[in-house]
Amino acid sequence: MITSIGRLVVVFMVVMSGTTTVDAQTLDTAALETWLERYGEAWETRSADRAAEIFSADALYHEMPFDEPKSGRGGIRDYWSTVTADQRDIDFRSEVVAVSGNTGVARWSARFSLESSGARVELDGIFLLTFDAAGLCTSLREWWHVREL
Image (cartoon, rainbow, N blue to C red; front, side, top):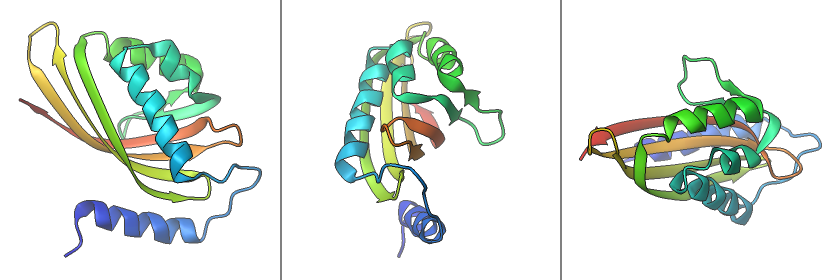
């Protein structure tokens, strides 16, 4: 039986098998793990500046599939300033699922408290990430679910 993540990896690998990258760094697992660590550190410290630094100047950040993406470092910084404002005691975890060319897939989870209500929240999600030759993320697409603990 293939799990949901297994299906996502199969679809990702089929799509990526016909894709070529030009002038892009070939991503490896270690580079993606390092980027995810920096992403997690930015989130856990609620640093919009640190978050923006790991994206290219023209990056697109797709938080919701039907919403307009956050655009560029400024848009990402503004989004992070707002979305993390009420979060406290953040614990971010991630694991690489697949890497192909300059694109990676990672599973992630986060737990935090909301300062306004004291509620404890858990998120579980998937990233589809594309990188430039400098190792900066040019495109982030995420799918996630939330539950209150």
